[in-house]
Length: 109
Image (tube, rainbow, N blue to C red; front, top):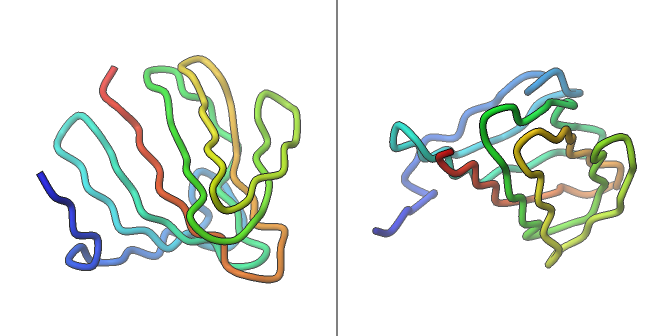
């Protein structure tokens, strides 16, 4: 299967998961798995949330920012991958002056 994100309508998600500003996202969902190509503008974030029933993988494709993971802040940049296992909490933050682009996968549990 090929997912062409350019053919998926972009959504603007205000305060996604309680975060700052908005998240621009193109999402594929098959009823169980979510795959999202997203972008956070400078100062935007995905709010802190816990993965009670699933895990999440976030691969940074462009830019830099930070991940808040179980209360600890970690710098992220293009080429790095963040993994949030089931039962843990995280947030993605763009604290830079340029867009932060990423690919997120929430697999079926």
